[in-house]
Image: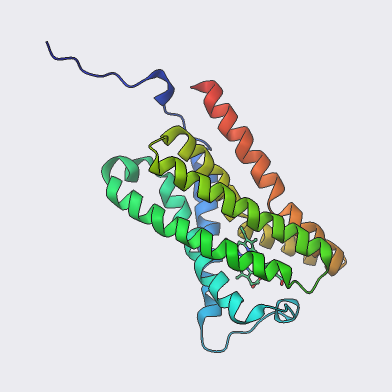
Length: 212
Ligand code: HEM
C-alpha cells in the first residue's frame, strides 16, 4: 500500500506581513538599492560626513555595491511562489544575498570604525554590522543543514537588519524636516535604524509560530 506523506502541522502557511506592507517594503528597498549603486560610478558625490569617514576609500564602494545587492534581492527571497516553482533560483539568489550581506557587513564594520560622528555612531553601526553578519551566517548554516524552519526565522532577522538601510533614510528625512541637531540625531539613528526592526522581526516570528 502506498502512503502519501502529509506535511507536518508546523508547515501551516501564513504570511508574515500584509501584502501592502510587503509591497511598500519591496518598493523602498529597490529604490534605496538603486540610488546606492551611484557610488559605483566614476566620480560619485559623497556627503560631507561620509567623506570624512577614515576608511571611506575603498570601503564605501565595496559596501554600497554589496549591501545594495543584498537589499535588492532580499524581498524576492520571501516570495512563496518563487520558492515553490523555482527552488534552484531561490537557492542561487540566496547565495548571492548571503555574499552581499557578508561583504556588506565586513565593509560596514570597517566603515563603522572610521565614522566621523563619534563613538556612539561607531557603537551603533558596529553592533548592527555584527548582528547582520551573525544572523545571516546562522540563516545560511541552518539552510545547509536542512533546518528550514530556523533558516526562515534567521533570514527574517537578517532581512530586518538589511532594511536598516531603508529605515535609516526615513529617520534622516525626519531629522531634516524637523531641523533637529544633526550629529546627536545621527548618533541616535545608528541604533534606531535597526533595533526596532529586529524587535518587530522577533515579534512576527513568534506570532507566526504561535499561529502554526
Ligand atoms: C545592515 C548593516 C549595515 C551596516 C553596519 C552599515 C554601515 C554603514 C556605515 C558605518 C556607513 C558610513 C557612515 C558614516 O561614516 O557616517 C554606511 C554608509 C552607507 N551604507 Fe551602509 N550599512 C549597512 C547596511 C547597508 C545596506 C543594506 C545598504 C544598501 C543600500 C547600505 C548602503 C550604504 C550607503 C549607500 C552608504 C553611504 C552613505 C549614504 O549615501 O547615505 N548600507 N553604512
